[in-house]
Image 1 (cartoon, rainbow, N blue to C red):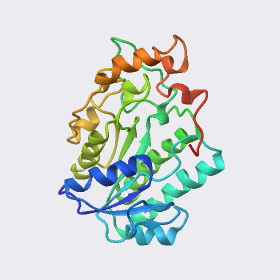
Image 2 (image 1 turned 180 degrees about the horizontal axis):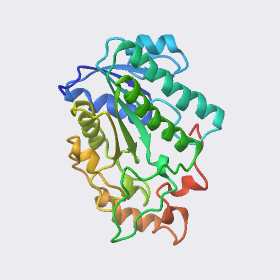
Image 3 (image 1 turned 60 degrees about the vertical axis):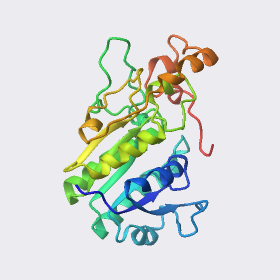
Length: 269
């Protein structure tokens, strides 16, 4: 697939969105920005809630693809998760269908499978077809998003790459993050691969860098053309010295979702 020219980037004022506003244009993309909050330095950004279906339809009109990062990115009351992450994502897909947009890259999350036991040394990595085991209402909403993407492919021919993003920060900030870190540069590489690969139908991929301590299988991401260049291992010695390894039997030791399984951080930050 040739590179789309114009992207709608939802959640453009959020953490990952802010990083991608700088890193995607060098790949040749023209960004149309949308967020519920004003986007710093972008007076032309669309300020709208995902519940505003008319604004969503106008936002997707004429774009080549959508990168959907908008929504609540931590745990919250179910009613808030329902409105932003579940209903809002369906509204986005329906707007894309109505306007003939054929490619969406969807921000899913490792928390869709957060109660999956993390692999031990010598065990195989977690595959993308592991059953959904959400660790929060937030993770549950990401399971819904993946299933919604499959439905819109099967019913309407809207293609999606669902990215189970780990932790996308300039550098990892915890020992757990050494296994699931996605550097901003690798995130842009993964988005570009997801936007340009041929015939993705609905493809689920894990989103992390080429981490020495990785827990999951990147083969479906690599099949799209993703070639990660970064590795969290350069931060490992310092982080382990500062924080220590997770206690044996603790959530960070047992589960992919770590502390989200028992004491998730709440939205807003």
